[in-house]
Image 1: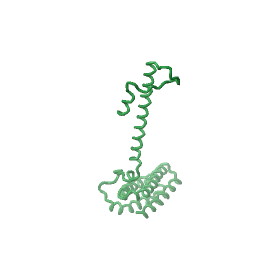
Image 2: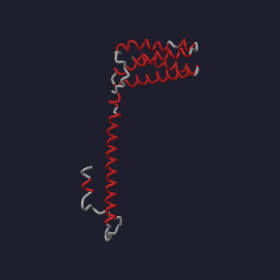
Image 3: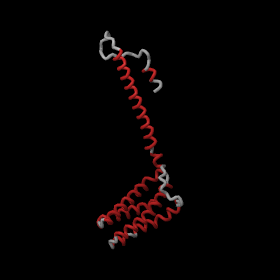
Image 4: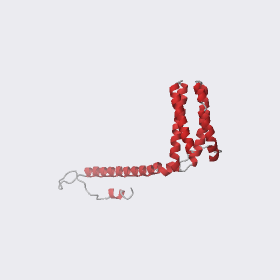
Length: 185
């Protein structure tokens, strides 16, 4: 911006005449208006270019796939190792599946409590495992994570509303996603 400003504030800037006649000499007032308009247009252009450049640079940093795959969400239990998570995830998945008798008996409150307890443990294990994987191996695990825990939430709401049809649909989706997850890990 410093390099452009001297061009605008020169003593004899090039005249931009509002008419096509070369014989009409613009007044001092029209000359000042022309300079203000030129400076205003130039300032807006510089501002637009600076904004566009910052958006492009920031967008590249934010949406860079390598950067995004390497983000640390810090939801991993600090005391849990990858080996512990991999050994415990099967047991926690089994606990989630074992809410079936509670669902069969329509013990909605007990099923909700057990599901919340076992799903929180599974979530911790899965986060630890996802964080330990290289970036290219994370997306399928994240997708399964999303399927499992969105269905856990939906099942929790369906149990609260005592909607047996939706409870069983969510339960089947959870079991299928857990099978896929355990086959990958």
